[in-house]
Image 1 (cartoon, rainbow, N blue to C red):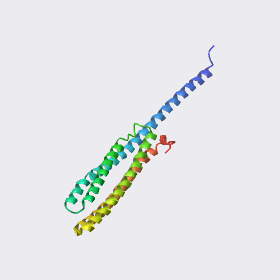
Image 2: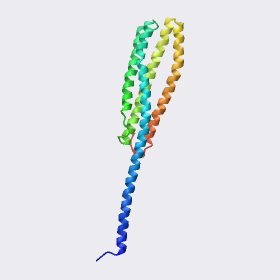
Image 3: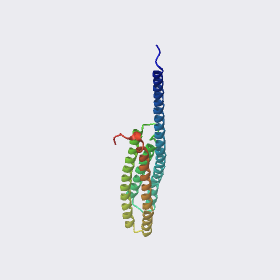
Length: 201
């Protein structure tokens, strides 16, 4: 006994609907993955720009120990200050090398969105720690430098230190603003991904 035509039509429609639903779900999953990868690639591009900035700062820090030796042998500063200045440069250089490698090895594409976002948050936190450490150490060095210059009685050296501070401070503040802006942008690219919702941070 065969089924009525109406039953056959309903069964056919049901199968077609199921196939359409499956295809739609696959398409949505594919679109979601493409969106995630696009956001991860944009965040990775910002990450690379951050790494280049940190690498440049590391190179500048590496120049501080030779500079400390130069101003010491020119009798412009005392030996303790030259040592502290060199140590400051070495600390900033080593921490810069580590942080640059940490940033560059943050793969936002292959890992899940929540994991990538956690890594971006870690980068932001470490950047803030290094910023605080760097500015505190720089403040100590600058104050000590002006004390050294005042004791030496070398007016030209004092003028040079003032000019250097007047030029370097705005540059440092500007670089910090740009770096902070890039860090926020990197995090925001990943935060905008719906897959990141529901993570606990």
